[in-house]
Amino acid sequence: MSVLRFGNSVHTALWGTEDWVVSAHASDPSVIAGGEGKGRTLRDVEPDFPLLFKVIDAKTRLSVQVHPNEETRKLTGGDPKTEMWCALSEGPIYAGLRPGTTAAEIEAAVKSGRFEELMVRHEAKFGDVFYIPGGLVHAIGDGVKLYEVQQSSDTTFRLYDWNRVGKDGKPRELHVAKGLQAIDYSLAVPVPRQSLDTPFFRFSQKTLNGTETLAVVAGEFLAVFAARGSVKVDGAELSEGGSALVCPSSSVTLAADGAHVFLTRFGKGASR
Image 1 (cartoon, one colour):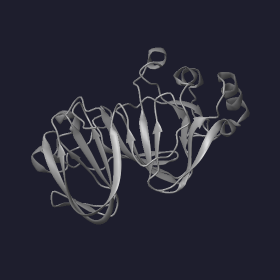
Image 2 (spheres, rainbow, N blue to C red):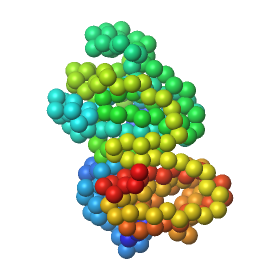
Image 3 (spheres, rainbow, N blue to C red):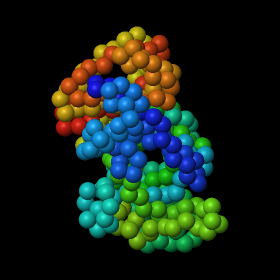
Image 4 (cartoon, rainbow, N blue to C red):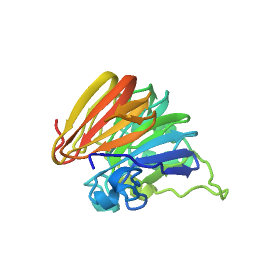
């Protein structure tokens, strides 16, 4: 199996939807859609698969959150979660706290309902990339659609929820104490960029005209996402919004007429 494709797995939330497009997380592993592995899950094939890929469609803003990193998880428990977002639409992104923000100010803002004043707001455009390491406070704004690459973790601490209520008419649970333990106040406010090189993955994007062959070395994976337009992956059509996973020690030929493609390399052999 050199190239894998998966069925959709859409999760519906109070704020919108998230589609787990490539996942080996135990709670919802992706099911292989065709070929010799059809019907098996990515977790069956690669139980130690390190990342989780999503498309998030925020009809309304998400809660203000923070995830633990490798150090703060020792205090909070759970799994570390560093992620990145690449915008598929225009709209507001909240990433990072105003410099000098203290834990006391956070607690006060939760109680007063003025948390937005502590956050840095960015006006994202298509293709803008934001790095969200574990420990950085963040939220996705109203009407934003984005592509997310993250460590395979579902640990989230909700600091603030914009004073809204859940389907039961009651405020959703907050995790302020653990959230404060998870925050890394040394992290800089992210700036939008077009590519990203992290300890966990390397992300790039391009508009593809014609064909290009990409090699994937031993120990490396390559995730391909058709962000705008369709692209052929070894001759098979990948429609807009579709994902394919290229397995280690193989190569893949992409062909498109002006499609915009996201490429994520990761794994022990990932080339830099």
